[in-house]
Image (cartoon, rainbow, N blue to C red; front, side, top):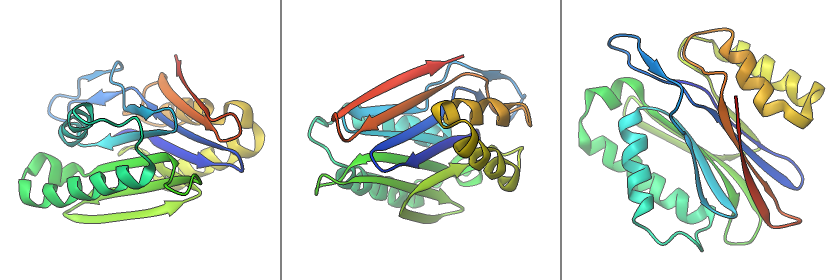
Length: 195
């Protein structure tokens, strides 16, 4: 499992993820996996944990008409995914879990950040102001300290800086990643890839 982040400010939402996927059997990895999914102009999500579950959900979304989706639609389908994982009975997914952070507009045109996890057959989902799911090989406290410090000291590039610093603490996070930003004042979003 690698790192994903979400943050909601007064007028923007930020989502970020690194690009590393690691094979737990042999330790091999690739830094070319995109964990950020832009669903439409005002909705995106980042994923970590079980690649199988992430890919299944990404394939599911590709088959849907998502142009008008709000975060409420995405939450509905994430709930269905987590419910179906209970029925799926895959040790690979059960042992790793799956984690999503979604950001965008809700049906009331308000910005919302939603954190969802499915781990050991337990589902949790809630609206938050900020979220971080740490990599498996770096503890939560270390990651949170880096994240909070960068929010206060380097806000213009806090997402990129946080991922790069966490990558130096373990082996499961790449130096590269993707950042999605949505600005409610301009109703525009952007995706930035960094190396």
